[in-house]
Amino acid sequence: MNIEGLDYNTQREPLLMPEYGREIQKMVDYAVTLPTKEERLRCAETIVRMMVTKVPQLRDNANYEQTLWDHLYLMSHKQLDIDWPYDVSEAEKILGKPQPMPLPQKGGRVRLRHYGRLIEEVLAKLKDMPEGPERDELVRVTANQMKRDLAAWGHGSMDDERVAADLARFTDGKVQLNLGEFRFEKFVPGLAADAQRRKKRK
Image 1 (cartoon, rainbow, N blue to C red):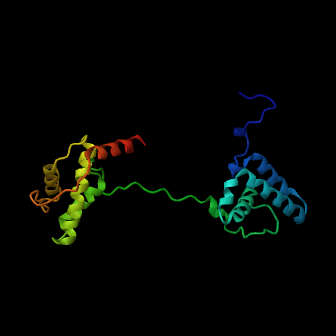
Image 2 (cartoon, one colour):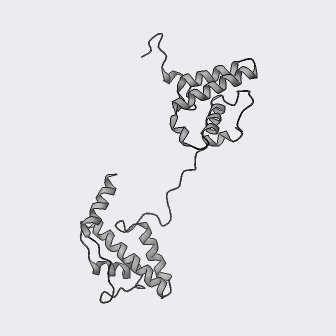
Image 3 (spheres, rainbow, N blue to C red):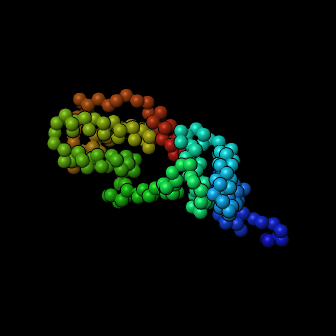
């Protein structure tokens, strides 16, 4: 519904730096139109002082004044012709966005959801590792993590035989856990399950 005389933000030009508000943007637009460099610079200095009151947390940064002048330069659409007190040549980097991280595609879907992709990758690595202290340590860490995962996903149920069987099965029999000698780390099953439930709620 349009009401005559009312000006909605949705009908206005989008703000490049919305944190400063539309009034600051209007001041910047006005400064660009001033006839002399001296007037434009004086106006720009006043605007920067106003900007810091709008976003006071910028003062926590060591180079906050540089940031303010960079923002002013961008808000003027690079049209403000003044003798800039700071180098604003790299101001546009502020608007740069990081490239989105692609989801891992290696191996397709996770077959062992209760263990997760990392355990799957470790089990695949164990198939080709030569016997020795390094492999023994990786087996120890992996077995203990698998037991924690079973506790978290199995409502507190932990089965040493299940871990040993899964290790053998998913390494094609290359890793055989001797339960008579192997000692799992001690941890409280309920805490692991509670941690997993808290993680799901987030």
